[in-house]
Image 1 (tube, rainbow, N blue to C red):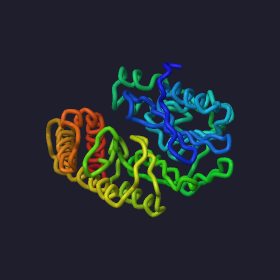
Image 2 (image 1 turned 120 degrees about the vertical axis):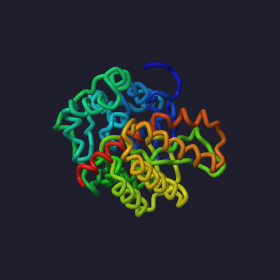
Image 3 (image 1 turned 30 degrees about the vertical axis):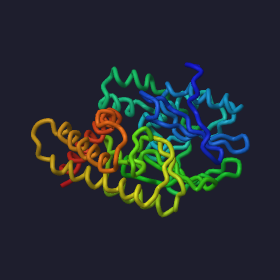
Length: 321
């Protein structure tokens, strides 16, 4: 155990939020669902997050042996980096993942290589360490509308491409909430405005597809969810205003990318700067209650990754034209 600080909080309906401490507090969440002694863990964080999962289990009188399912929404390593290590500790668990992502968790070599290409070797090792492969016999692939039973609690898997092709969301019938991974964007509670929560899309490398993402958001809203459980970060009520704000960010990010398409030098930097300007302008239109410097620091990594993803999308579009 790293320390005795409390890293989890009870939400509702047997759901606990665990801070993955992904670089900092309040950046990435892991969700623990307990139903009459059986546990599902949605998202894993990284290997460095596992002590916080253990701490949450101990605080609630539970154990790794009670974990039946480990469920990363997709295989990006802030969501699935700790899956292999966690599976070693949870002897009775099966891992459930998207059919397009399963092979990367069984053999994570390409996943590691792709992430190193984005972050660099040193940053990769600092954030993720070594990714442990998962035995194929313990992996369940979950196509669209696949369901599992957690001690009488139905969890349904919704295919939601757009952020990545290997992304699903999980609809929990008991809470009528959706564990949304990255499909429903990023909204950090530490950034507050007079008009409520601030949210924007995440367009990280390498499979961003704006039209698919817009369709996936509409697909989720067709379920009339009462709550979205965001990985980045915490719970948010999917009001019409929140949904419109999220969709608008996708449209604007796409436009920013297209306007920068023929930039000869530092195209990613140009896209990032324009994303940052758009988000800060939006924040202060909404009556942001923090300084521009604070907000810039909070969204800096997201704007960089978004710009990199949009640059890849531009390259792919050019090839396909």
